[in-house]
Image 1 (cartoon, rainbow, N blue to C red):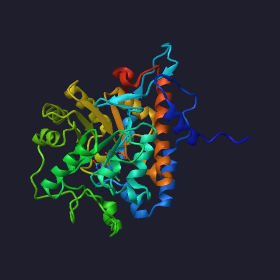
Image 2 (image 1 turned 90 degrees about the vertical axis):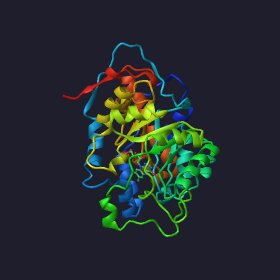
Image 3 (image 1 turned 60 degrees about the horizontal axis):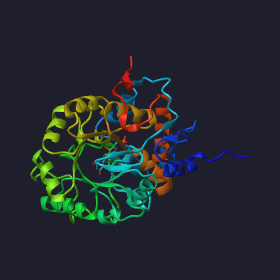
Image 4 (image 1 turned 120 degrees about the vertical axis):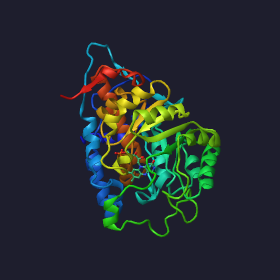
Length: 371
Ligand SMILES: Cc1cc2nc3c(=O)[nH]c(=O)nc-3n(C[C@H](O)[C@H](O)[C@H](O)COP(=O)(O)O)c2cc1C
């Protein structure tokens, strides 16, 4: 008899997952390296490089995954854990997994379904999706994609401040749950692969959230400051998440300025390089912010144990970029579901191995620095 295709059964398992569900012995067969290789076979090389690449010498990109592995788990034994709960809340919204979709641009280059495919795939497994300003689909259309799942809108500073303000208002009107201000892109990082490849969007590729004829980032417009956190909150009527913070002092100022959450990120190693890895910046940010704001992290997370490490270090939720890109490129919405469900199954499995029952209360002493 043929073995069951676990990669297909896992999303269903997550879709049906209820609070405190028993954990299967085998978390499934997600292989992100193989998925990336399949995506590379399917995509034009310059598009695959645009997605995979980083800035400058790509030191940050190379170090991201290893930095999570510079921590070690400290399993608890004899705790009577027979079921694991991976459901949580982010800014008060229920999600069935603490692993969300990071914003990423130009999804239509990965798959014809573009952002709608990602939205369907994330919603199918109850995961939060962050929609990029640089989406190929208008923000209202992604918001309305069924099934409707938890969605946040990521805001870039665009050519026209008036247009940027208008986007924030429209995100509020369209039903997004938060504005994610990306603050680590005052200017674009030096993406050397894109230069070498002469990477450019196809002439007919529309960016409906951008002002006509303009693309971010911009110089010559007033740069954002901490005051913009409250301003965008008022304009949109939404909580504001500040994405791209790597220092405790900045994180504390964001919280004081009214940020509901701080998102520790190196922008996937695509901006300043080399910078401190998210896995090393996260503890400082958590210490500085305390209970003032929620804290999230992304960058190089590729296994359930990486995710558990981030949660133990104080992240309430994490986000993944490239794993979702490879999922969409290889399988559309189903591919996205499989990646998110596969990582979540790994997380549940690792929690069971570590004697932890609830993803919302992972103690800090679950990890220690590797020696
Ligand atoms: C191809 C690509 C496009 C991205 N586009 C955006 C974007 O439009 N807005 C944004 O805030 N971050 C963007 N990011 C950064 C991601 O949101 C996220 O911080 C990063 O990808 C996480 O690292 P990971 O890819 O290793 O999971 C992009 C990343 C990639 C790889």
